[in-house]
Length: 128
Image 1 (cartoon, rainbow, N blue to C red):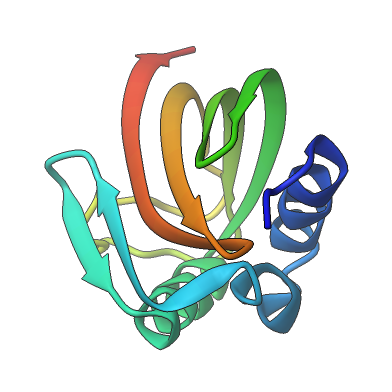
Image 2 (cartoon, helix red, strand yellow):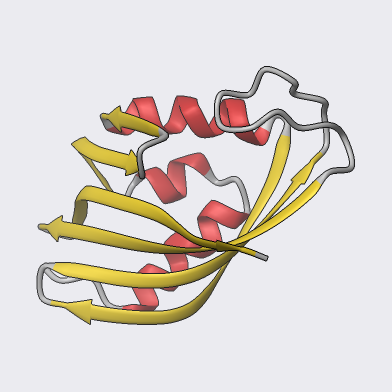
């Protein structure tokens, strides 16, 4: 089973809406997620737990800029806007305060099998 553009757009939409059940339904149980050299998370629930912590402090909105789909993978160039809603001075990726806005572009590679993401590799392309 391959993932279509419509499927992937639904994945991004559920992520932006903080629909944890929706976006995590795209993950294999043992998905391997790498945020560049900043953090590695293995497992669907681990990713959900990470984002519940992040989204309790930071609103995050992804916009697809470019998307390439292959039978077993997806490459995305995206813009992400992070808006801090609760101070988080000890956030492991960067310290942040309420009202801070950070915009970045990233390149993300997804490997999938059976309609589920098995590997996700994300790297910051540039800060805007």
